[in-house]
Image (tube, rainbow, N blue to C red):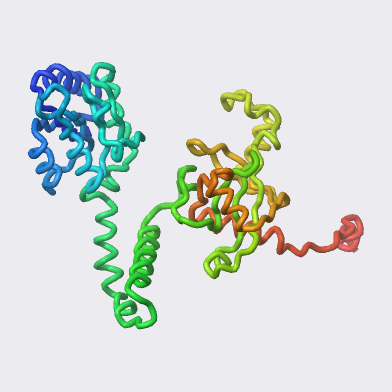
Length: 364
C-alpha cells in the first residue's frame, strides 16, 4: 500500500477532527492501494518550518487562510501557500471560509492548485484528487528528493565531471552562454535515460510557448484556421526571417466525414477506422498527424496547404491577440515533422515502368 502524506494547515481543532480526520479515516477504509497520513499543523510559523525541513516529504497540502481564529480577518495562510509555490512541488488545495482573501498573485487555478469554500467542498473528492495526482507519478519525479534530483546527481558525477573541462577552457563563450550550453547538455543526458517506447500524446506539445518570440514549431490560430510555423530555426536565430512559412492544420473531419458525431470506437465503421489508423500512423506522405491534448483538437498538418506572410504583420497580430500562439511542438516530434516535410519535397520520383513489359522480360 502506498502512503500519501498530506499536510493540513488548520488552526481549528474541531474542523480538523470533524472534517479532515473523519474523512481521511473513511478514505483509508475504502482504499486498498493508498493510505493517507495527515500531518496536522495549526500555526503558520510551524507549517513553514515543516515545509522547509528536508526530512519532511509531502504529497499535498490543504491550507486554511485564517490561521488565527480571527473570524476571517487573518490571511496568514497565504504565506504558507507562497512558501510551497516558491520552493516545493506538490498540489495545494486551499479550503477556507474566506476564499476571497486568497492573494491574487497566488490564485492560478489548475489541476495542482485551487481554492474552495469550506461549506461547499467535498473533502473525499479532494482526497481523491490527491490520490489521482500521486498515481500519475509526477511527485516521484519532481517532489523533493524525486527522480529528477537523482538523475541530476548521476549526470553531475558520471557525465559532467568527466567533461566540464571543455567548458572551463572555453574562452569564446561568456558565462551566460556556457550556462545555457550546460543546461542543454544536462537535459539531453536526462533524455537518454528515458524509455521512449510508450510516449503520451500530451508530450507532443509545449503549452503555452516558452520562447518569447515566434519560433519553429509554434502552433497558431489565424482567421479561424490553425497553422504550424515551419520557417527554419536557423533563420529565426540569425534574424533572417522576412516572411514566416506556415502549413495549415486540417481538422480530422475534413478527411473523415461525421467523425465529430462518433462518441466511441465501437461506432466506427471498418473503413473509417482503417482511414483513421492510416492518418495516425502517418502513412500518407503529404499529411502529418497531431494528437489531441487538453484544449487542442487533433488534426492533420497538410504539406500541400502553405501560407507565407510578413513576420512583422504576424507578430503584430499576435501582440494584438488577433492571432493566438497557443502551443509549440516539442522535440523530438518537431524533428520528425521537419524530416517528413523535407522528405516530401525532396523526393525525386522516377518514370513508371510498363509492368507487363517488365514481367515478360523477366520470364524470357
